[in-house]
Structures are given as C-alpha cells and as structure tokens.
Amino acid sequence: MGKPNSKKLLTYLKEIQKQNEINSYYKAAMDDHNIGHPISFLKQMLLEMEDEEDFLACAGIYKAIKEIENNSE
Image (tube, rainbow, N blue to C red; front, side):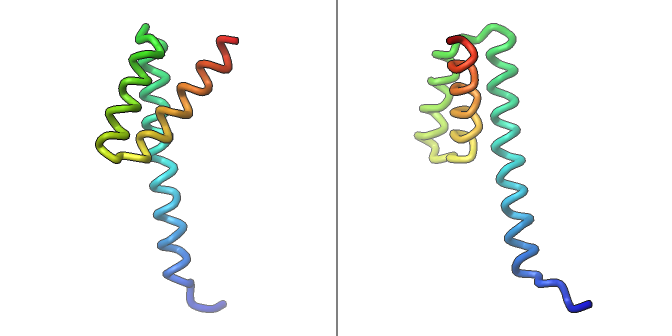
C-alpha cells in the first residue's frame, strides 16, 4: 500500500467543509421559514450574503428558497 496522496486528501476535505457550510445555511434558512419567516425574508438574507460575497451562504439559502418555492406550487 502506497503513501496517501495528501494533496488529494486536502482537496477532498476542503470540499466536504464547503458542503457542510452550505448545508448549515440551508438548514438555518429552512428553520427560519418553518418558524414563520416569509420567503421575502430569506431573499433579503440572500442579497445580504451576496453583498458580503459569502457565496457558500448564498448557495445554502438559495437551495432553501428553491425547495420552498417548489413545495408551494
């Protein structure tokens, strides 16, 4: 068995960390909606995160908005 490729492992771990952050924002946005915040609140949060260039947050919030919109049709 050879030596693990540390560069590939580091890349993989960084990707997992990104996905975890996206999922964290997705869950927070869904929680906000479930306690009564309207979708307009989530869209405002999306704009604020975009202004801050927090694109992982944007991805999670956007995912929640799309799920909510699809489920309300």
